[in-house]
Length: 230
Image 1: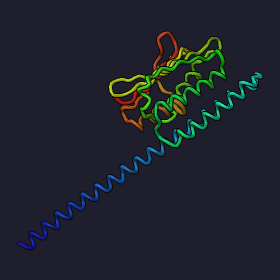
Image 2: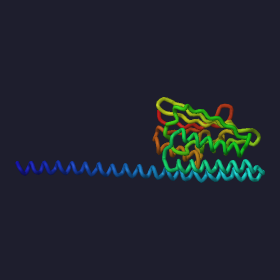
Image 3: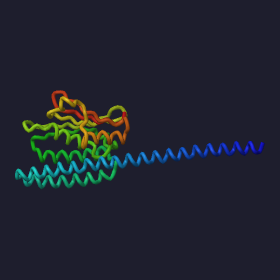
Image 4: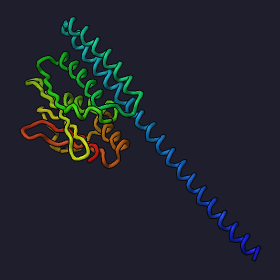
């Protein structure tokens, strides 16, 4: 009886130890997955920042070339402020929506300096949504995409940025009245920098609850829509 009891206790201890080892292995795997996801997010942010800086420097160079000295100095000051904000945001995976919109406003003012009357923008966001946490520098690539693919030298480009609540989540829309999407790639996200990175960062942060869709705008232009939660 004693031997049978001992064997039963030993068998139970081995099963418990096996379960404990399996749990520890799973936990280590989960931690590694989180670390890899965070490293990938930081790498994606690093891909976007130099691209943004290059575009800003090109904007200043354009002002210098046309002899707009005062506007060039103003642009340099704005770039410095944007870099300060970008470096601060780069230290965190997520920032408040209010901070992100503040960064975006400074960026669009710089675009306004560069393109003058060729670039117009509007922003609307309820103050109550300002505390929402979103990936840092997630909206600026949408504006950049509108300028790069939508601007037509023959007429001004207007970009509307809208943020609103939907269910238990939020929606961020960037809509332009530019040249629109290529007819052979309706709704397809371009590969490489920009929108593809935005989509990947949303997936890493929110899983299926973070989405980015691109669609033609009624009357011409493009609509980019970020959905988070709800």
